[in-house]
Figure 1 (tube, rainbow, N blue to C red):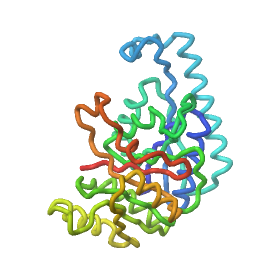
Figure 2 (figure 1 turned 135 degrees about the horizontal axis):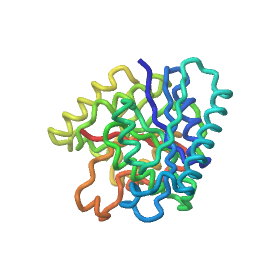
Figure 3 (figure 1 turned 135 degrees about the vertical axis):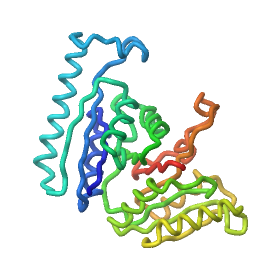
Figure 4 (figure 1 turned 60 degrees about the horizontal axis):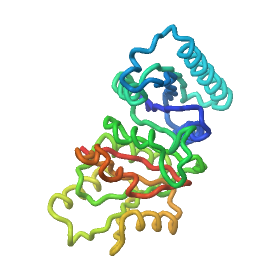
Length: 282
């Protein structure tokens, strides 16, 4: 059984680059790629979306543009990707993005969501787009791979996993990371701020479980002292020229969901050239 990958797109260069990256990352794996575009425009507020008239001329135009854009992508991929292991499907939905993603993950048993770091209208520099952050925080059924516009694919020879071992690892998500490493013969370098001597029993247990998950992979442990994780991670990646970053996306607290505090990804800094894989906790 092959992989099932969901690729949201707003037809921006960022999202198209994420699609190309996904195809190359899984070049040797049997995959079904589901390319999703949301075409409804929320003109009157979120609560009114379901009240939009399906015969509304504006809505019909949005639907037409969505299907034309997806058709153009499908035509391009059909000609460019001759890989017999790959199959492409397009999905045009008139609903909220997060609702569509949640429904598709459940109905199609998606293994991973792969998307761009920013959307077409996002002009923020040095930060991930709000939509991307919302997807990461809302999707808890599978990992999310975020691909920045400047990311150029090369087989990831080294993947850095940032963790404090305080959070239980989700086996399904860790399995996806392990498969990426095996497919590309990558090493996984675990980066933490604490040594074994300072780990409590729960952290030690999580570390042992991680070793079991990655038993067939070149695995290394790295400890950085007297530094914040974002600074340590960015320096580590630059010095070693790592090709991908991964981390455990912890469930947000009530106050964090209200906007008090940064997203977990926001705390790690912004990576302009390499993808980031968000793994969910258990």
